[in-house]
Image (cartoon, rainbow, N blue to C red):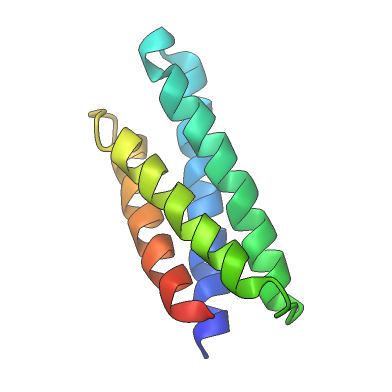
Length: 104
């Protein structure tokens, strides 16, 4: 059951990170770190979701732990900004980190 929740949280976070990263591209250089973390977070969420969906448990724990760590970093960066997409991304990242910690 935890795998299903983890997959959904990762997919939700992936979408939020991609939207936030796009918004950051439209802003000035003060959003560069946010852009970098959002794209990194989107990548790890995609990998984590795919591994959990196919039941690849050999490295599941390590991938979930890394995903949670990157989600925390992305959330912390997004929380520095006032844009709605950044706030939504931070929330999705916090939820994903919690789901990943319960998963494996």
